[in-house]
Length: 132
Ligand code: AMP
Image 1 (spheres, rainbow, N blue to C red):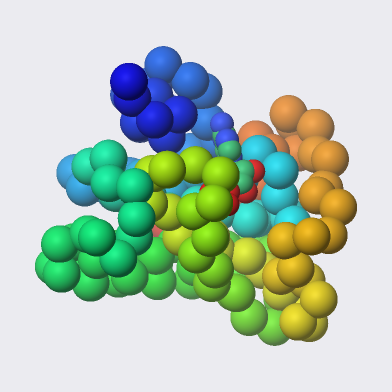
Image 2: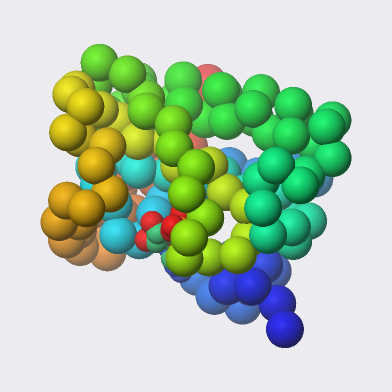
């Protein structure tokens, strides 16, 4: 059975898309720690990030960098924090999270509740930055 993230890539499950190319897909995390919290995934369904082919893993970092640059232009923050957990969804993904302090990237914190309109607005603004 396909992972929930493969279903997102294939459009079977909706997502707030940020960016896509032939090999990678980025979308907003539905339970964000901060506005702009984004997940980057390979389209290839591999459970564990560090099982990815070397070239795919390297290129995923470069793809994430472009996305991070766009997020930080839209969401004021000190840094884009990068996290890999993979405890919930068995499809490799990198979390990109706007942070101002260490506490901002604590996954045990309560998640933000954003409206559909807020998610759509954030995604549209980040996409716009990527298209500059
Ligand atoms: P983890 O596997 O521990 O890195 O956590 C999986 C992450 O995926 C969590 O932050 C979830 O909020 C996020 N997530 C799960 N399902 C969806 C979905 N359908 N759309 C966007 N984000 C999701």
